[in-house]
Length: 79
Image (cartoon, rainbow, N blue to C red):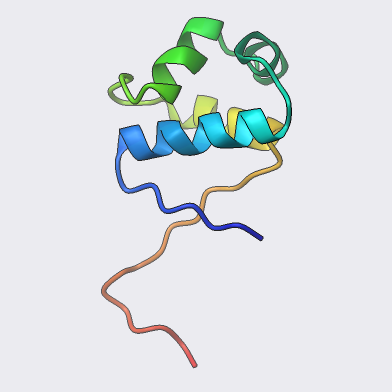
C-alpha cells in the first residue's frame, strides 16, 4: 500500500495525476468513469479547483481504487 501525503490542493492534484497515470487512464476516461467533467479532472490535477466537491473527489478516488484517510496529527500514534 502506497500512502501519499496530500496536505494541500496542489499535492492532492499531483496524487490524483500519479494514480491516474499508474492506472493507464486518460483524463477523459477517468472523468467519464467517475461522472465528472474532463475540465474538473484537469483543474483538480493542477490544484486549481478551490473548494473541491468531496463527492466528486470520492468518486474519482473510487475509480482509481484509492481512498482518502484523515489522520489526527496531534494524536500520538497508537502502539
